[in-house]
Amino acid sequence: MRIILILVLLLWGAYLWRKHSRNLLEKFKAFTDREDDPSSTPAQPSDAANAANAANPAAPQIQAPQDMVACLHCQVHFPKSESCSGLKGLYCSPSHRQLSEP
Ligand SMILES: [Zn+2]
Image: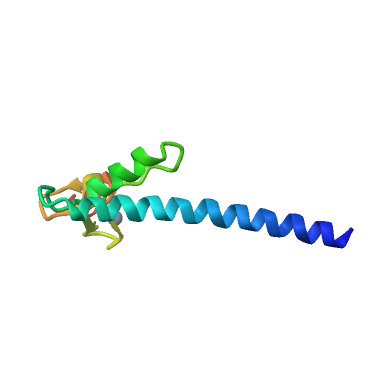
């Protein structure tokens, strides 16, 4: 009975390993194909994120890298797109802007 259990675990592990290595191989192939094409433009981070999202729509969405800024009031870093701009600079929230610039 123990041998059957070990065999099942080994087969399950081999299945998971094959599945994972196949995904890695496809990503590597897509990456090298893009590099081999001389007409292609240099890959942008957003291109890689879009390619990853298109390859597996069920996977969590990968966001392109964003510029990070620090709040002038609390020094917390956050994406620049989520910032509130004030007279002196960028803030993480309207309340911190109001506290620094009354
Ligand atoms: Zn803040």
